[in-house]
Length: 156
Length: 201
Image 1 (cartoon, rainbow over the protein chains, first blue to last red):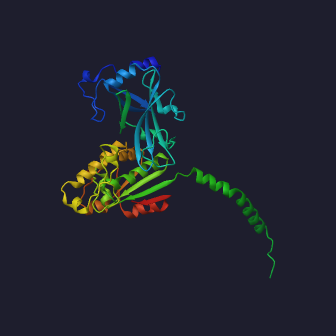
Image 2: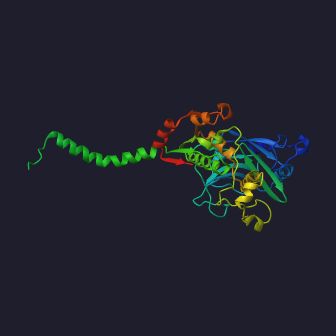
Image 3: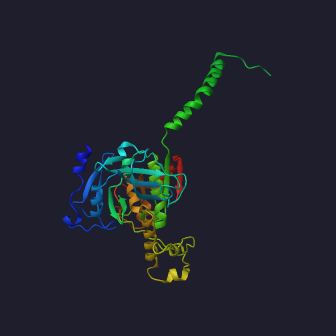
């Protein structure tokens, strides 16, 4: 699909249009600020806060929203927001365009070290070659923009 | 002592042995490389803290492409309930850190000394401890037990429930999630025997 066509699919409404009160950590409600993306042939429900929606429409640089599932002594979820090029070692099927500048990708990750606070700097995370990644693909992701910072949460 | 008599069969055996020495290591390596590793877990505990390891290990094994299976017995059976009722108790567990998942950093890093007398005597203490643990895990982005179980189901981890435990505790199959096979130890133990990794949790 062409980016222009994909851009048309970005939600045009706001939370107030649907009467939904958007709270990042609150219960999910459907509304016009929600869209469906497909990764590995499976649907992922993507919901934007009004602020995130506004910010997404005015992006200048490409932004990748990465759903990171980190396998270690715990299984930890984190949403990374990467400007510029996406992670190099992620397969094509794990990435999709939400608009011409906004991308969504899923990255199972692991490391030889075991730290729950692991971020992008230390210890080095590496993409985990999951055999059936679609089985681990999140069902939904919430995207928010608050105080100049992108925030996100995903789940199953 | 008589010298061994050279016969056509002896020559054949020698030739076969020589060829086997040449070919067998490669053949065995090929078989090993194409084999799917397997993991068998016996889950016996149903508290929140002990509910995590079987699902974490099984989902990770499945992610690696292994065949994973879990046998839920005794209190581990609670992990198969539609609504997982697991709680955590710091009572009698001096290794469990009592830390607050909110407030300034120094406050969060402080390990609260909780004498058993307090933990045993205050009504609802386990609810508080369970809430604190869940909040800590959420703050750190740790997937919930329910999510991990869902991942295991999606990743085709085989789940077995101990039928004898179901009977003894008076449970009904309708209380548990779908897709569970109800078996006995004699069914699962051979699976454990053949598994590359077998764990008792």
